[in-house]
Length: 152
Image (tube, rainbow, N blue to C red):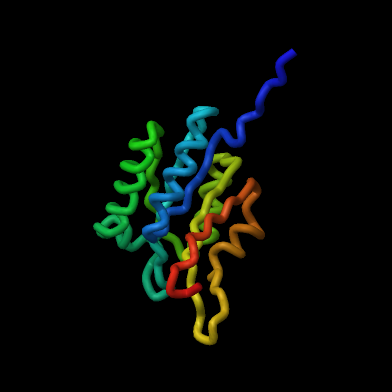
């Protein structure tokens, strides 16, 4: 008797920061999504400062944001997958990403982590990833970029 294989995920939300590591993340998740024909949602969040109204049209005017989404779609298509690109603006990136995962009923949320050092040499993880790890109702994958040669 053959054992039915449970797909690793059926819907993944990929947080797109615009960092060069996004291509690698989209490529990896696109390849894994093919086996189960999982849906991919790429989300880029433009953070709106508290001094501006939340509904100010910041994201709609951002050519950078649109390039990030277009590039993610292009990379996914290159892997034979479709990616639904979403542009959001919010006060907090982590909360917006978690809210989108909840709204989409995602069972996987993927974030990239750039390798950064703070002053004093401590590894910096930022505030978005801890928020997502604490609050996401689904599995969370954090993909850290390789350590640059000059840092090792």
